[in-house]
Amino acid sequence: MALFVFSPVFLNRSVFPSRSVFHCLLERSAAWLSVLAWLTFAEPAAGQALVPGAGERITKVGDDFEDPTWGYTFNNPKNSSELDGHSRLPNGFSNNRRWFEGPMRGHPDVLRRVPTPEGGLAGSEGALLMRTLQAGTPGWPSRHSQQDDLIVNVRSHMGGTIPVSWMPSCVVRVYMPPFDEWEKRTGNTFALRAGAYGVRPKGEGKSEEYWPGMFVQFQSKADGRRQQDSANFLLRAGPSGRDFKGPEITQTGWWTLGMSFTPDGQVHYYASPGVDDLTAKDHIASHYPYGFRCLKFETFFFDLIAADDGRTWSTPWIIDDASLFLARQPKVAAMPKITAKSNLATQPRKRGRK
Image (cartoon, rainbow, N blue to C red; front, side, top):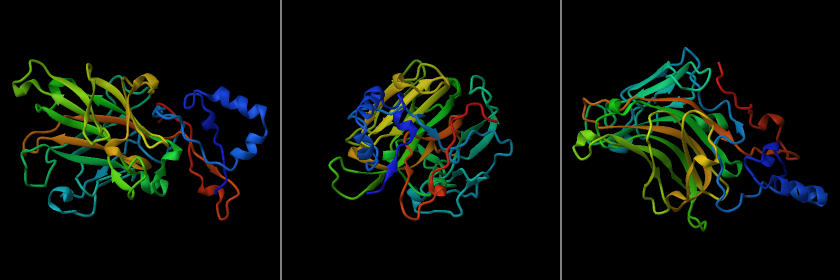
């Protein structure tokens, strides 16, 4: 068994409310220390959620869009292999190599750094505008809603997937324009999603990839079935694989969204209006999506959904401060062929960075 020592964040009260009890046990018996030195981190109690943003921010992953030279190379025509089997390499990518076009679906048609809308994070001067027109097969409108993806380059910068024992989470600030600026279509319009690997709750079968997420679903008065526009979150997914309805979105403007992953294999969903850090009161739900118990976190990404009729643009979405966190980051000790350079480089979270 590998020998681990504990990161200080393990004793953080925001992650484990029972911190004082744990400390009492350590103080009463020095024998605990010799036992715990040979153990990996214990799993949290069943049903215990993790607030996204807990722990250390991984600064080499994600983006705050503060670089005025931020740009994106589209390499069109874009991918549509999920629809027609065509991957049109090379993929699109950002000039800072923190974003890329997915292999299954293409990137949004507009990816542009813009001034941060009013009410954003203090000190933020840049954010990312995302909008799309041809969300399906390039040049062949399907006249059905289709989606484009923009993926955060997690795996390359982290050197692989992240075990859920490290308790990863992702957080993003999202600017929702006034409802009268949304695409006049009832249905999903935007999503924060994650790529993960898991097994059935009892551990049967091999590990499989799946993609939980938080969608924004719009009910447009333009469809003639309602008197006013409205929206709500739609969470993917429950244990059966079915999406389930989340909270109503009663105000537009800035929101903070987050997803977290815990060693018991659950996925936790959070949302709050404004740009303040998420807290326990912002918890929406915790589930085993599709019946999977999560083992590894691979990446997080954004969906943009449009009518794909060749003439109607999607809702203009703006994101800022897309971030990855680890609530536990074990430091390896007394292991052969492991050096200090093998540990992940992290820095404390900074808000309003230049």
